[in-house]
Amino acid sequence: MPRLRLDRFKAALVGAPLPTSAHAEERLNNAEALAILSSDALSSVAYATQEIVLVLGMAGAAGLAYTLPITGLIVALMLIVAISYRQTIRAYPHGGGSYRVSHDNLGDVSGLVAGAALSIDYVLTVAVSTAAGIAALTSYFPSLTPWRLPLCLLALGLLMLANLRGVRSSARLLSLPTYAFLVAVFALVVGGLIRMGQGDLAALQATEQNLLMAQEHGLGAEQLGAALTPVLLMRAFSSGCAALTGIEAISDSVAVFRPTEWRNARRVLTVMVITLALMFSGISVLAHQIGAVYVEHGPTLLYQLGTAVFGRGPLLLALQLATLLILLLAANTAYADFPRLANFLAQDGYLPRQLTSLGDRLVFSNGILALTGFSALLLVVFQASVTRLIPLYAVGVFLSFTLSQAGMVVHWWRLRGSGWLGKAAVNGLGAVVTAVVTGVLLYSKFLLGAWLVVLALPLLVGLFLAIKGHYRSVARRLRLATDKRLSLPPAPDTGGVPVVVLVGQLHRGSFEAVRYARTIAKELVALHVDLGLGKAEAFREQWQRQLPEIPLVVLESPYRSLIDPVLGFVQGFEAEHRTSRDRFCTVVLPVFVTRHRWQNLLHNQSTISLRSALRAQGTRVVTTVGFYL
Image 1 (cartoon, rainbow, N blue to C red):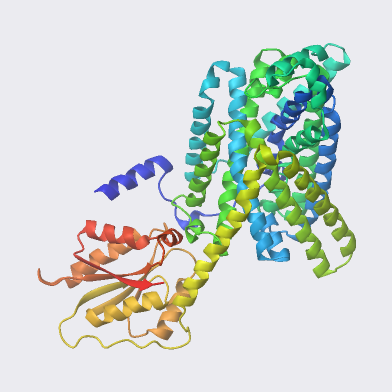
Image 2 (tube, rainbow, N blue to C red; image 1 turned 60 degrees about the horizontal axis):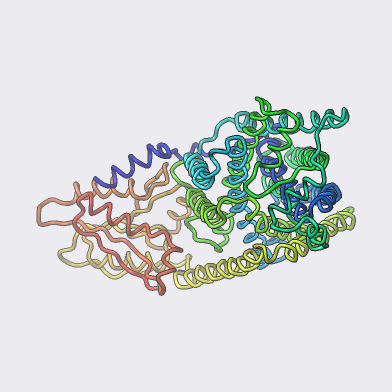
């Protein structure tokens, strides 16, 4: 049977289904949380200084002299954002993501803007981290450079499969790439500073820097100095702000810490920001000292520093492999966060309800597939170039920072508890600073790609609102009074057939199907499948209150499958009631009929797959009762 073969292939690819009872959230100690939740932020040092150097290099040696001042500004910004998020963690001890904070305190539209910005950020995190990780690999193995895009797509496919399998290796195992990267980078920085103090670190002279940059940008050496403008400095600052991506991850995931959750989360956030600032500053100091120059698709800045400090030996290889692994782990962090955000938005009715469903391996499979598809599209369109992706990256991050901090100001103002004014002032400063940075990002990066984010944000918010409007309209059409007994037409006096009617919820759509089934049924059974959502008992009570004359059978589905329990029940029902060749059983399925085809995407279309499975099993009569929305 095609379905059986498909199920076997799926099980071989992503693993056998897991029961709902196996779903449990892992609690992390501080060392594990630092490694897992900070990988996105810490890994950004692999490309943040590099992008500053790339932009400043357009002005030659004179421009590269501004590497350290810009790094200092970004480090100060890190500290402001971190202090603001420490307060968010205390106020939202169960997780204070930008979407939830903005939605609760600033209203629906602000929450949706934050949700859209975060969605874009997560997609870009996967694309940028994957591209940067493969760049680390191709720097050490230059022969692989022509295969950069296929390697990125291969890595993306492996990440997707790993997450679809729900492989939850021990937290200690997942911590290894982060700590390996920390050891490698601190060894690089400390070793480089020691060699710099001994005068043993060779530096590229200004004339050589100018020559390389002139060749790269097709300018005369004398034209480079003229390129040093305030706009160029703003662009360099904007590119370096990629170092702040991922700082909000800890405030999103406070609930995964061991008790006391908020206190441990604040400690880890503090350690993460200090570590990030030290690594970022150290790399910038070394880059400034050796006069490193970076060109797009050339050897990465970290590779150049590693070559200067370690030479081409095992330590350089270890640095590159650690960089590759932490960047893939950073991409993997987005695979955990994006499906969770999509689930929140879908629960609130702003995204298709399918995104709330757990897959066979207790993960949000539809969210994982969507994230993979969007990230792959970006990698193909931008040819897996970190430099081309970065202009899109930080805008959404800082916009969500701004909305989150503004939401916290409103939160403190509403509570007006002890010390609320000081707390509001801290978050207010964070909101103002990140808003200014958002403006700088938009101004300096608009023509380089930030316009895509500016265009995408209102389109996404409009899409969210259109989906919400559709679900509200559907809810109005389906609404039934829940406290009144429902009247049914009489059963046929003679004839009639055995009928099974499937009911997921009791609303006007399913009630119409029950009414039809009653008119043709000699023996009628209503069938409900409990998918483990905790609503079965409430449904039984509602059924007994409103349709007590129709027998209700509730089937438990520990693996969240609708089809398998229904097939098993129908097979037994037919065996019991089909007493002759001329006597057929009927299965009645309620189905929504939407006004527009695109609206079908907002409903799970389970009736189609269930009808096909019943017919493949040999059920002769399957009737759908349409309810026009």
